[in-house]
Image (cartoon, rainbow, N blue to C red):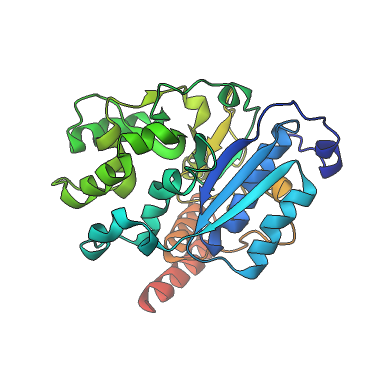
Length: 328
């Protein structure tokens, strides 16, 4: 896939449409990933103006500077929203009675934070790359919808519908959610989701994603999987495939598995594509992950080496995995 240069992107005239709002919820460790996502969106939609909202609890000065640099590079606006959940009264009861990490709540406050800014916003996970134009989404009428979502992978959908005992046999992946802010707020979706997290008697394996599916079951609009095309790199690496499989007409390709496209140690073609997009972002000087960084990645890499017929390297990485696990 060819990635245009910064100059080629800036040379495009605007399309005259209002700015399209996109929100991310990240911490300092995910700004590099988000940089690749944003660059891929801008590169494939050079004539569209975007406003990128970033919600976070804490952001380094370096990442704040890089985020602002996007405005000088492209036809975009950026807004950093530093969160203190104590400012949100609807969380007061929840914060005192929950074992969940605060980070899972960030996505739930997007409508409250942006209520005075825009009527609609697209939430994206930061392990997504944009492959095509967003015109159909930019022009989509969601005035009658609370949220527009995409079905999860068939196996996950089937299992979660059963586990959560959902009346409507549908279940969405939370990595892409197009939100109608006034309707979301009017229907009290955030408080209802918090209540589901606290009071559901089922195993909430996917935390707020499960809770949102409980609350929005039968009340969300489903669109084509091309808007959240789930791509698990582990499936390729387990069979020694390093080229990206064809993704058809996918718009957003979501690398939702445990191996991400910035894991250069995987040697997968997705890493080359991610690198090209990162190179036209303010995070261009940041390296990809040359080695596995945690026990899960170490163990997977050991398995991949073994399946590639490299037993000694497999053993080396497995011993490193054992050492890191023992040090915990």
